[in-house]
Picture (cartoon, helix red, strand yellow):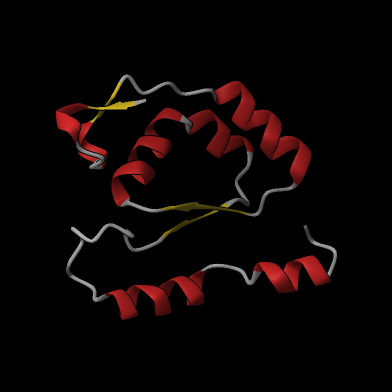
Length: 100
């Protein structure tokens, strides 16, 4: 994946490659319960390109986080941090429970 215009904005991404076979294998082997997106743009692309996988794994939940980009100014950084803490699992707790 390369960004055009020397920018990392999602809308500037081009040459996107979608490896549906590997995503299918990962979901099959690892019991993934949630997929997190850091933008609505990426979520939209995923849902359009991976329709068959979404149908195959209907219990997988999709969670869209606020964009971490400083350009996404609708939320202050403190609000983003609070939202991330609310939506993301506590990896330390999962590890202690044997989940990772």
